[in-house]
Length: 92
Image (cartoon, rainbow, N blue to C red; front, side, top):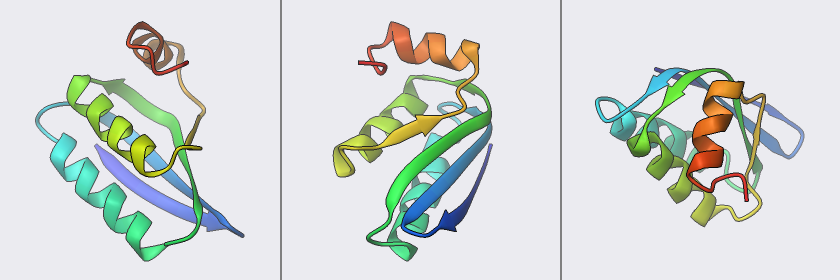
């Protein structure tokens, strides 16, 4: 699992890479929220282009992020990861 970011004007793009599961979700959460803190006031977009897998622990990280930012967008989601989002109601 790797978390990187870039900014473009008022948008913070947080890129997730690899697998997010119970073994690394806490680290992913810490990285994501530290990045958000460093870029306060920017709209967050999660880029899931390189995200291979997300477990329920990873979904909790996304849910926490969504609660903090109601207009959170997730882009470039693979069909496999989209199925997980869809089955758990995250696409609503």
